[in-house]
Length: 382
Image (spheres, rainbow, N blue to C red):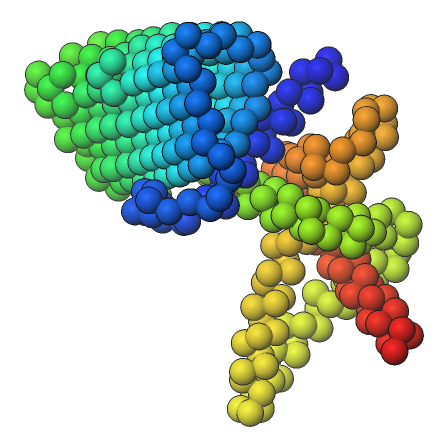
């Protein structure tokens, strides 16, 4: 059980690191640039390596065989060999032309899948291409700017994209939220197609569709369903930020999160005051015209603190979870698990709002107290 948990944690942490490689929006426009991730990694055609296999590099090419799971993070990543396990990969550009025995999880500016996948595919990217040679035994969850499907998917497909083109086969049902959907004449849809969009899909009369097609106008989408897309991106951003802060300021970040457990009433008090008084201060500064620049700075800082607040609460929750589960301490793993538990709790009806309020208030108070104590130490050292 612990081994499975650790594997999932490692998968999440590694794949989310790629968010530092791709910018928001049209990420594929910047594919030519990527930071230095180390030397190139080449697994030759005749090489056979045992997994789990973890590598980072500017360019990663796997043409051989990996017996086990592979975790790859690079600028340009190409897999045209065989991976007898899961593939967790992130990079500026990711291309999969070989064979993956189990699941694929990919995050990239440009994701191209044009090989055999024995399990499910989860892909997040600026552009996602499922090529004509792609053969996916399981289902697909894809979220990106543009998506084109020309291959074969035996299972269901769940799609969140701007421009979406279906020109291949999908053996199961298709659900999605899109801006524009095109079903080409070569499409073979063995199940139903239900999509949320403001526009009617462009469906070729020659497309083979076994089930019904249903469009749900954006305004009539089921509001009871959680906003998983937003929650997912929020989780990714917070986890990446937390990893960076824990890397460069581990003691400060850990000490701030621990204040929530050590001084709960104090952090809630200071957090409540900060939440209430900061907007008032911004308004007063705007009224005094000479204070407008300071008001803008204060408002931006306030918004950033509101977003960052879940980071410290999440780390605190993760620490408690690891203590209760008697797991070996790992700051990055505790952050990943804590943020996930916190986000899931916040989706609960009614009580989720209260959890969110307490989380923000406590973390805000912890940040204020931590900053105050740091300034006191600085003054004492002069």
